Image (cartoon, rainbow, N blue to C red; front, side, top):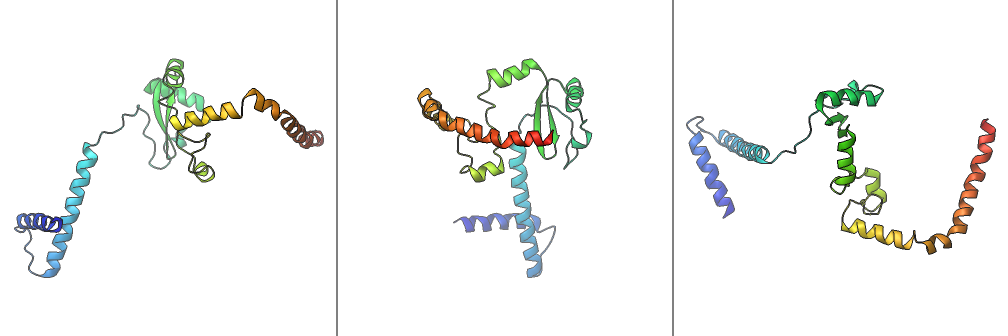
Length: 192
């Protein structure tokens, strides 16, 4: 049924366009069908991209296509961000290379984001290496903030960070610290 419907739709489109281009041979007919399909795909894609809601980002400098604002960044980045805050306000976006960054330059805004509404902003993009070494970023360090992460954290603190567990591993931790210091102390004497 779907191929019949597609043939009917293509036939209707071709009939309406046939006054523009009469196809007298099979090559012209094939070209016309291919162009019709591409036009339909383009129209559908354009419709969906124009009707989907775009993410509302804060204002900021445009930057260059590949490099973003990296060529314009002052070596003293805090000075550069202060200048941008005077132009764009306490929240602005900066493209550093291909990475889009949102900068919070006000203490009040930072408190709102980091303390009051921290659960909304708790997730971050996983690092590619983390995806490889931690079972697709599903461990306690790289996992996104969700119920599973809260459960992992609770188990970790109850099992590994309890007073009984810390007391049981005290000797091992002390031995490791002494071993590490034994490696680094001779190196500091040689360099001075």
